Length: 348
Image 1: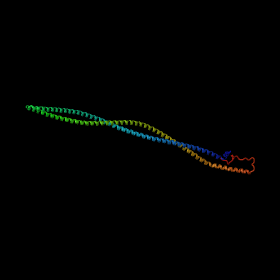
Image 2: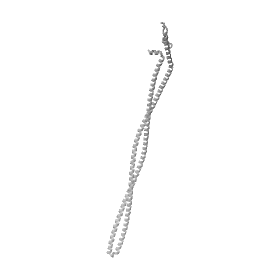
Image 3: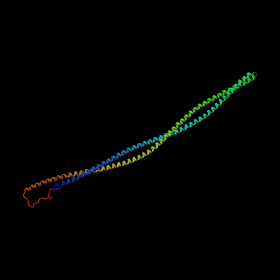
Image 4: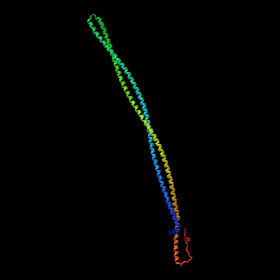
């Protein structure tokens, strides 16, 4: 058929077409492999970038957790300092409470002493009043007796001398009684003044006792407040310690996850580098193959041109031969045309 004639006419061209078609599809397959390698490289690049993004997110999360952990540590230290200050304040309040109780007890003791002195003073005033009342009663009796004796004196003038002596004695007794009355009144006034002084002192002691009791109540209130603050801070410190323990475990887990993510990122980078080496190798292979193709095609071109030129020359010779045969007489029976295989113009 036509293909057989073409193959017989252009064997070198046919071989060239065959190998060029084979090289074309080989190049297509290599480009497909290269494109697949590039796609894999992009996939691995995306994975590496995703792993890097995950590592950065984990790092930022870990740094934020570490910052929160450090803040909790500082808060715990501040709470411990506050607890120490509250403990010192509680100890000081307890000392003040003890001092206030001692002062209140001392003031109450002084109050008891003053109350005893007041009782003694009241007894002294009562005794002085009894003495004054007795002196007054005696003075009245003496005055009454003087009146009676003067009446007797007037009635009994004969006994004037004796009665006057008796009157003088009674008058003297009355003067003595009045002196005793004055001394008793003076003693009463002194006792009353001392009692007033005691009562004034008692008022001061009562004020001192009230102030001491107020100080004691304030000190007890401060002590209770400090104790409440100590209890609150102690509970807060316990809660903070538990939270710090949980945060430390969380940080350890985050660091482990970050380490695993970094290992995965390194693996992804290594896989990408390996894929890049594969891609570079495929690209180099394809470049070498295409360079070899260009070289072979460059080497084949003169042979193909020679084959075409020879085929044209042969066609011209055959046409001339046909023309010459038409002009010649009939060939003898023994004449046989040459076969194509013996044609010296046919070359591969």
